[in-house]
Length: 260
Image (cartoon, rainbow, N blue to C red; front, side, top):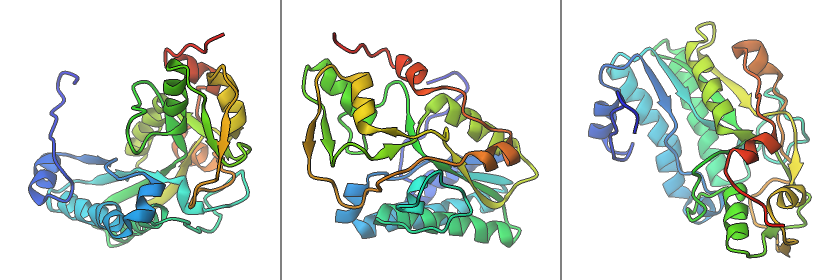
């Protein structure tokens, strides 16, 4: 890891780990989570414990350490099957235990901010991708899975008809947005802010960009939304944040080569 960075391995469920991690800090970027919709359907209590209650406990530890601000990695999944472009003013309709736990985590952030204990802001990530994502993780997104299958000369698999859309945002854009959220001192009341590009790409199109073989289609999976891409206007207005990396450029950064 980078010079000047201390790596602490552990679980946010461990109070000692949390206390060690936040000691002497002015700001906490709370990115720890479990992130699989499918796994959350099988383990809903576990997801509530780690994602929702883990966030509350992280807030408590941050307050006890005198931290002034916490930025929570939220999720666009809280919107459910909304009609895009999806704005923060839309109602929430979480369709999985993962999404519900993320929404509860946001509620904890707003409650702590409202009580004056700590400033918080909650970027809602759309589909984040970037270099070194693992395809063999249970949390893997579709891009590393497609690239891994192409590298092995295997047919890409799409669940459903492939016309479902997602808003793919590069990790470099997300990091830049997080830094802006950390420094935006005129926010802090637990505001939810979309981190997306404002552009939707369906999975058939994505497979065409990454894979040389046509996809195989299998049954749609439970708990997954049909269409999802952001209205990114509030992030621009509140944080001065706009995604800069388009999908072809971002995919090129992965070092992946589509076979001819």
